[in-house]
Image 1 (cartoon, rainbow, N blue to C red):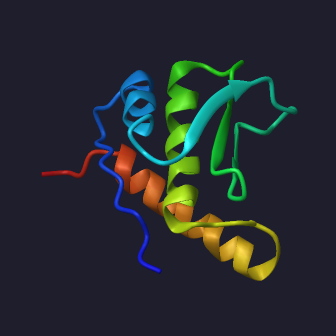
Image 2: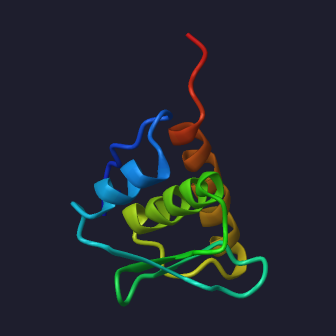
Length: 102
């Protein structure tokens, strides 16, 4: 299955990314998450939860990270395959959020 292409640019704010996510077939909400958990993607429910206690900058990164998991249809980040998915997701999140040098 081909991953969903995300239209996120480096200059988008958390609010802009959150509004963009409303146009996608995924539910995004916020809640108080356990310590050291910034975001969660549940593939069965197609839902992303972002920790509401973070700054907007941190929420921006966490939401984008979880949207990348959603775009790839990731269902678990456990084991060897999970570690590879997590590396890919971190790399793609950085590529979306960090401006390229012209």
